[in-house]
Amino acid sequence: MSEELINQVKQLIIDSLRIEGMSIADIDTDAPLFGEGLGLDSIDALQLVVGMEKAFGVVVADAATGTKVFQSVRTMAAYIAEHRK
Image 1 (cartoon, rainbow, N blue to C red):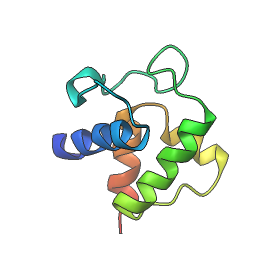
Image 2 (tube, rainbow, N blue to C red; image 1 turned 180 degrees about the vertical axis):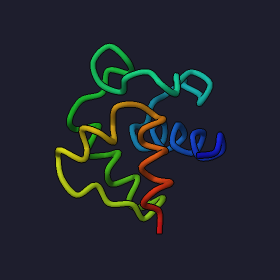
Image 3 (cartoon, rainbow, N blue to C red; image 1 turned 135 degrees about the vertical axis):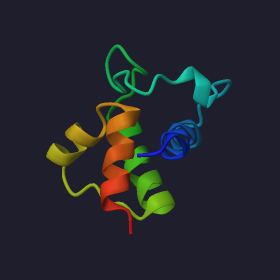
Image 4 (tube, rainbow, N blue to C red; image 1 turned 120 degrees about the vertical axis):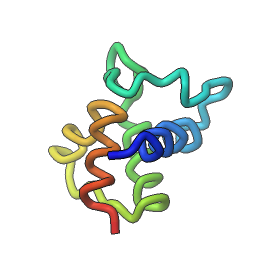
């Protein structure tokens, strides 16, 4: 998985969630996305699912998969790299 893909995922998070004043450098690749990390919630997760589908053609099939995929930027990028069309 490339650093370029990791940065694309960070930009996807910023764009999908319309986070003002945040750059990709502000997002820790291995920090949790939910809870104490970025503090995202279930609505944010839905927006990221849609963003991943549009940007990368990757589908998150169910909640169990989503729980694994949305642990961190790194897990998102790994899932995209594995499932990209």
